[in-house]
Length: 478
Image (cartoon, rainbow, N blue to C red; front, top):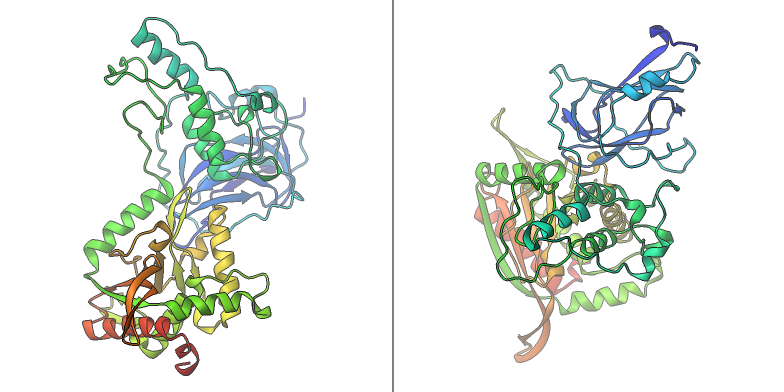
């Protein structure tokens, strides 16, 4: 059998997939030793503190070795995969068996071809000098049904009768068929819950498995315990990470959620927060929203109150430019930004993220609508890149979509202000000397008191409220 020379082996290192990031967790390998890869082919998916990113290989060859298993956190600059680029034969069987693979891995998935239509996300190749820090791997995942059966057997003295599977289950793809269609966040959820995606019935468009499908599979596999008091499971029965029991759920804190928690704690205890509130009649703004929906300039674009609120905030910043600043602790300087990277807080399957619209102040209203639509759809699909979440200056968080009146938002680290928008709903309001039902909302502006004093913060909030009350000011104040 032909062997490969060390000179023909290339080591692909963990790239710097975001400015300042030093490590990433390997979520999924798309190739195995012996597979042929081509330049630009996605070989794995990794998760940083900011987002999930697919990594393409930068050359052609045959995979020789995977240096780390799924679930391992690896430093930037550390080799993660070896590829023979000298045209050697596939890896000998002995080496393939010795390759790093999860103990309870699902059937190997087909590698993604370079022309599969998926656009790899890759920012740079920065190198870290620190040594590799490997996070201990979790033990082999125990299937949900197996854990449930063990628990029920211990409690009842006999194994439970498996619930009848729904008729739709007959359409689930059998093991060993082509890879089930699911987005990376859904695959991660299934992995954490110990669910085999090949057994899940898809309900999404084009046969895509959704989060609800995964949870439905878990619910179908775990019998409901109806006793009011349930004895704890014996120590020998260990549930996998993110496993729902009758009494509590444990979710590993890592990736985006871990980074968000650290950032919010750092922001809350570093920047002195001040929050001001104002309740405003936005009836005219809501009428303008309906008019813009019928305007041909907005054909194909999503027009909603958030669009006009964002534009109102941009106008208020232009009238009060000192609010758009950051605090440079090292230089002991206030840095006033002459551009606005407008952040929009978005809830995603991986946690709360704040992508931003670059140079939002330079966009027309239709351009701003287009940017908002792209930002939201990309975030919901879990495809937001690390670059899209960097460099923000001011943020909007729309808590009104949850029916909440207002809140005291915490600043996104490094930013000067964040505007919370409450629910818009009809309320009795004095209008032209009479009490009438009007569309009303409450705005809350939190700002860094080192940068923004009470007068400046009040002016910004008052300007936003005035524009939303009389949206014609978008023109007269422009």
